[in-house]
Image (tube, rainbow, N blue to C red; front, side):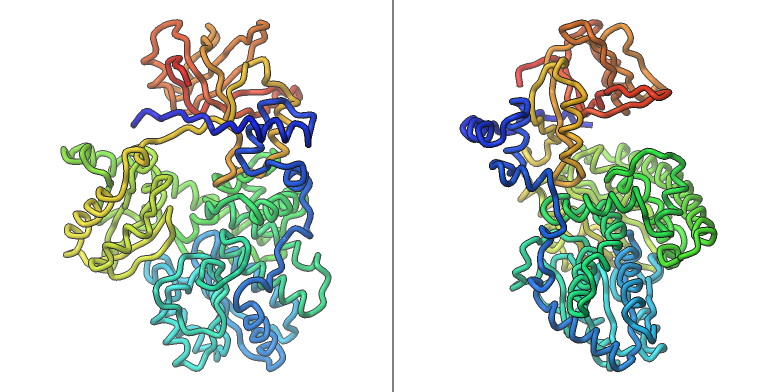
Length: 572
């Protein structure tokens, strides 16, 4: 693994002085953090810390929203059959559940069904099997969620079958848009919607918001669905900025106070009573939901999210929990095998990409493995396996590199591909594996820089350990929810010496202990950093980069540093 480069975020002293005048009362170093996140006036700061539902954008600012609403209301009036089709991941399944729940509320005849494709046999996106299922029901309105923006051929099939298509997606479109009644996707050309980074479920939420508006329903009629939107947003790793941050602030409150029955059952299987955060969604709830599609069929997730009886929901949630345990074992085994393949290849060290293939790997975990390998080698990574005579893969990028564009430049070797700048999926014929791998390496090598290939730790502010107190912690927590593009503030303290209380835990982790200038002790935890710590000279001074967490033991609360990285003391 490469050493990380520490970068102190830009400090605009003039803006700091101005903000200190406009919004007094914060520690001086906090103004640097506010300004680095675009909070450079008292008004933006007040809005940030005091969110309100009125700050959400008007759904009708989204291109084709009026067409989508008109077509759905026409279907309800004429008692048509509606099918909601969604992807098999968290975003797709929550989006389908959200739309089906709301449509059942406003459609008395309840002629609504849904379809989730089989991950292994149908793959990503609108499938022929899904279209055939829709035809068998006599469907006249087909609505896709979290997919469809590139389904040009499939949209043609839907049209030829006499069905109208509405697309709710958030992925980047191709050169040609599919034939449809309406496309709801902030990323499409000509869409003036102010915020472009909604999840697929978030786009579906804007649709039901517009429907509620048209039907003169109270605004709160749709707010109860924000637990689903927040789950999708946290699990799909879209930016937690702008409108997404607002949606997640409101949604987390619902998740903690009064979640829907299905999510309540999933939360029960987590086995702890700590308040849910975006971390809980990304690393605890999301993996459980995704495990169904990886190892069985994601239809059971929608069944769970639609279930109103808790006793039935907990049975399904327990199945998800079991699948997730199996998934973790598969992921660990596959990651070890992939690393071993790469270690045996002498050319790996010189490459700018990682492409690794094994025909027996489970398709359901290769995306997670790609993420693990990206963390390890820190370069664009594709993990591939074979299924039904076709090689399929998941790709992950590093910050600042457009993976989707690089894969598009290799499209002559691909059967299918899609995704966004940070992650993508693809499929190809076995005979194209070697030329694709070579061309991908060539494309990336020509466009990526050593700066991009260097993993970075961005420091929000340099402080002393004595500055770490509950007042600071409360201010930082008020900046939540944290996630992509709105990370938890990272502080650095330079030139500290771990005390004799510092020790290695379970051969992998470090339990740090430091004393501040006043002799007050504070603990820190560095996960998976034991090897690095062993290489330190005894009594060495180090710099530490960390976030601040709260720890509770036997009713007593204390602060703890979560060590992001550490290094031999050096100028920053």
